[in-house]
Length: 95
Image: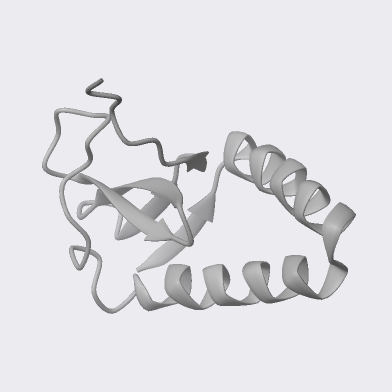
C-alpha cells in the first residue's frame, strides 16, 4: 500500500512541529521521526488502529501519537492510505 499525506495533514503537522520546536528543537525532531515510523508501519498493517472517533466509517482509523490523533483512510481498491490530518486529542470534560 502507498501512503498519501494530505495537504491538511502536512500543514497541521508543520504548525505542531514549530510549536514544539519553540520549546525544544530536538523534541520536535523526535516527535516527527517517531510519528513517521508509525505512519510507515501502516503499509503492512493498515487496520492496526481502532475505528475513528471522528468519522463513522470502518475504513477511517485513528493513529494515536503522544496525545495527538491522526485520522487516516484505508482504500483497499486503490491500495492506498490517506493521512487525513492531525489534532490534539482531548478527553471529554464530564464535570
